[in-house]
Amino acid sequence: MRQPGAVRSRSRLAFSRTTLIRANRTAPAGIYLLDRARTSREWMDRELLVRARAGDREAFELIVLAKGEPLFRTALAILGNEADARDATQEAFIGAWRSLPRLRDVERFDAWLGRILINACRMTLRHRRRVREVPITVRPISPASADSTDFDDAFNRLSIDQRAILVLHHLHGYGVREIAAWLGIPTGTVKWRLSRARKALAAELRDS
Figure 1 (cartoon, rainbow, N blue to C red):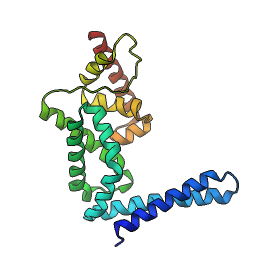
Figure 2 (cartoon, one colour; figure 1 turned 90 degrees about the vertical axis):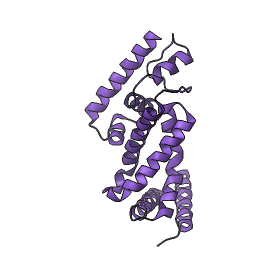
Figure 3 (tube, one colour; figure 1 turned 180 degrees about the vertical axis):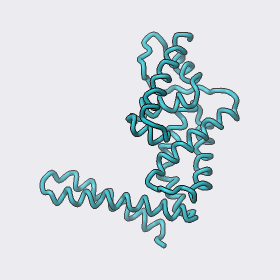
């Protein structure tokens, strides 16, 4: 079994290769080496997941370090409170660790973890029994007549599912197919939910 330090060293090597190869705009050999570097990174990510799924806590800790910050940012945008976002992120990782042995396809780990996070956000709101506010940068319908506070109030009155799909699309810039993979739903459902979420936000802004 490889030690975590060795994994991190190889990861740094893979990134340095990518940087050097991107700077080289010439020979096809550069493209070949770039592909090898990308494959190396993907193989290391997969190896960590396979080890974690087999019960390796150190491997899972490395995954938490890599995924923790983006997951927290997503939770913060959805929940609107740092304490709630930390709680939801922590619960998501706890849930992931417990359920990881049942994950069949490690290639779909990110989407699987994202769905666990959204469920954790939903449970956090139910536990708190109230919605908190935070200034956010999602602006899907350009509410020119509403000030920032009105917009945040309106956004925080949406359901978790509505917030999540707006955050994924407008804040993180995910396309319809990426959101479909994240949420585990068909692309047509993503388009429908996104449209409904925008209309719900518009209605909340009109009522503000």
